[in-house]
Amino acid sequence: MAMLPEISAMTAYARTVALAARLSSREQIRRHQDRQCIRLTQHALKTIPFYRKAGPRFEDFPIIDKALQQSRFEEFNQPGISLDEVIKAIEAGRDQVRGHFVGQSTGTSGNRGRFVISAAERFVWLGTIVAKTMPDALMRRRRVALALPGFSTLYRSAGRGSHIQLAFFDLALGIQKWRDDLVHFRADAIVAPPKVLRVLAEQGVLAGVEPFSGAEVLDPLDRVVIEHATGRKVREIYMATEGLFGVGCRHGTLHLAEDVVRFEWEALPGSSLVVPIVTDMVRRVQPMIRHRMNDLVELSDRSCPCGSAFQAVTRIHGRVDDLFKFDGPQGPIIVTPDILRNAVVDADPRIDDFRIRQRRDGHVVVSLDAALPDEVHDKARLSLEKVLRRLGAEVLVEAARGMTPRFDRKLRRVEREGS
Image 1 (tube, rainbow, N blue to C red):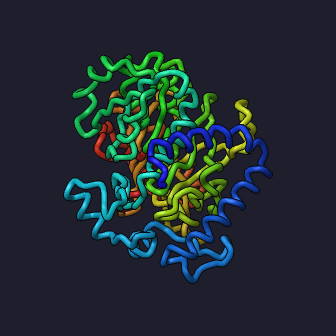
Image 2 (tube, rainbow, N blue to C red):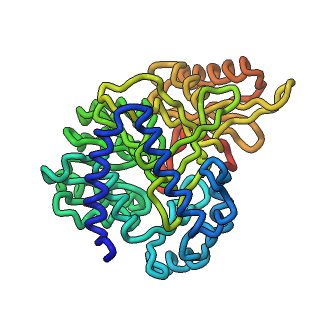
């Protein structure tokens, strides 16, 4: 008899809590991942058309990316559902195709990613994320506000839980449309993009609420404002269409979800940042095996006071597409977002927000709050020019006054135009 979805959630919840306690060393994590990847490899060889000629070892499977997976969509899922079927179902307002759930990413920072999962997998995801974010959910009731782009059935399915009461707030409507409703809901936790958390924090409506940051990069500038207003550590949720990758602990450290995802790393030449290659060890209907992501990650070598053996992350710095590229006398010059950000923020202590954009013509524009004095804008521009020149890039940097807040797309403080 097939397992009921709700039971799948409870099983995943219990399993996640138990694994967090049992996987207490890097060696135990490695052995756990080896066992899970052997099972996944055997499954993919038998049931997923794209992998029938791969292997036989996990390490023999090819590294793929979103473009390849989406272009040969039906070869990557067990029932052979096509990308066209998924798109038509979503456009018609349906979330199922041939008895399987389908969904898509928001597409606010690039091309949409579509996916296929089973009902059981949907609830396994739910049980896993609840265990990592609210391990006490079975012992006390929680009121959780969700202000995230693209409310998928993954989120709405959580509303069935008797101990977690959810309220959904549509970012597309604008914060002021539902701000009062959020206050009346009296949430004890909120999950939202950091730009939304910051606005709500500045409006004084998040005092005592546990903040979870998701859907976009959490900048230290936003973290300070949010934590000051809430009196709580911001806990990041690192996830994408490809899976749940990490959750912040109560000390504010982002830990990778190495009990359900195996990470390999590609070094970024000339930088301490790395690009993750992820394998979701749980999903079976549409496996994600050795999938190269587009993220720029800074790993931490420090142990966390929480005691978790899961890899800690210092910061997610943005996307590979947001690397600035310049022509230099010795060849191409690549500049990572962290270098650009630090050049601006360190220019003057009054800078608490910014945008840096590389135009298609190669010129760079730095934008600050229009209320700041001219001298601050000049400092930011000159600091950025100095850093780029030191790296060998002779480029014109312009200063622009004002930043228009947008809630219909992900916030990218450092962005290369056309990426």
